[in-house]
Length: 306
Image (tube, rainbow, N blue to C red; front, side):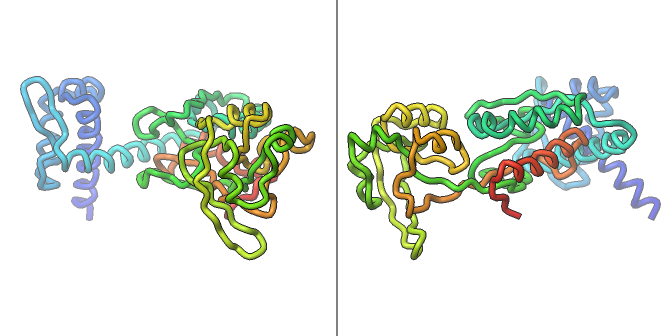
């Protein structure tokens, strides 16, 4: 049993070396990071390759590159090494209040409407935690961009990430009274074909009648398509067309009747909201914020999916 334990420890150490070589494409750079000679790095990689029975690197005089097997192995090894490091940090955090920098990637409009208030309240409880927020619609890569977590609208596209559904946003169609007075109010989904529809993407709108579940798909069109709700909102307020919008987004616009519901008896597909992380084992600073965020999402009356 003791020999098996020692072998497991050696495999893990070699995995750590493997990750550093893969990240730097160099035995020498990995050695500099780990504080060991290049010859030791090379020996440990050879031991690991013998253990797994596959060649992990293509070696040349100038650099080393991952083989196909190495690329697959790297995805798993990097996560294992990161989780081991986080386990040690988690123990340390038990003796101190969470602090440090959180890097997160979030959608612009959702963040402006909901996250800004949460950040203010969170700062009162955890003043030693700072944030670097990327609101770029290009969406940061959690595995390569150093992002601690991301918030995404819609089903996750990356099966390698850990997804936790935090809310479901109900949506509907809205337009300004001025637009409807000038162009008429749709009475059936197919009437949308005669209107300017402000869209996030070039895809049909699917509407479901609340009374009987009957659905219709309408290939809507319009002069403007944009990947930003704020832009579409401004256009809708200016009387430029009909937009699809979350029921809780821009609540004040509806309360003041500058935007009104179109086809209210028809529902649009709900949009799930997810928190994504690269691992289940999170630093204390990230874990306490996500827990805090999940609680506050309830406070703004978003229907949360268990």
